[in-house]
Image 1 (cartoon, rainbow, N blue to C red):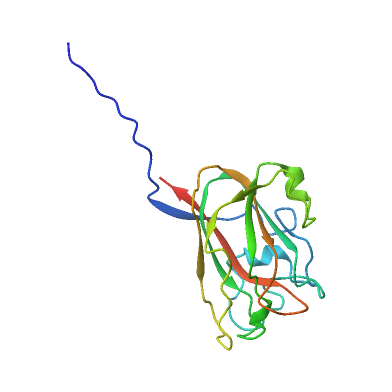
Image 2 (tube, rainbow, N blue to C red; image 1 turned 30 degrees about the horizontal axis):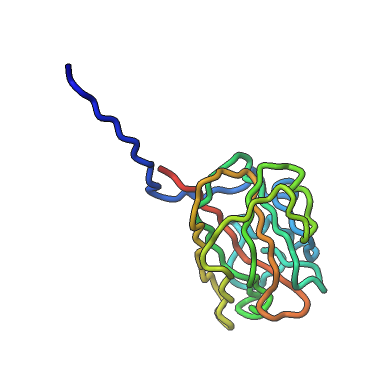
Length: 188
């Protein structure tokens, strides 16, 4: 009689794959506020330019809303996100203080949580640990893409909905925005 030894070896992620919402529209990407024609879905659309004028190619909050903005994304199905890559807000290399600074990353599988854009409401959302804790300000006067990475430090749970609960920007008193935001799913 032979003896078999079985071991449970956890799967280790081998790479990342960019994932996007099923469509670039207000059904799948929402924010608490936005400036006319600077809708949140444009920050996820890889066809939008990353240099030159920001209008109308990215997300920017409505005037007078430089803090306390929720930014929600529906990926269409539950995914384990391992990192986020972003290009923070700039307008032809200027107005960089409008870019998101402090934020909380959250995940949910509740469509009602996804639909509720009230900043103080966290019902149905789970906070996801990340590093670094804030977003880097775009380099002033640099008109182009500068990509930065936010790592999810303990990626385990698959969520369909992800939220950036954006607390503040880098000092602007009128607006908050993001030029590009891409979620990356862990692949094994």
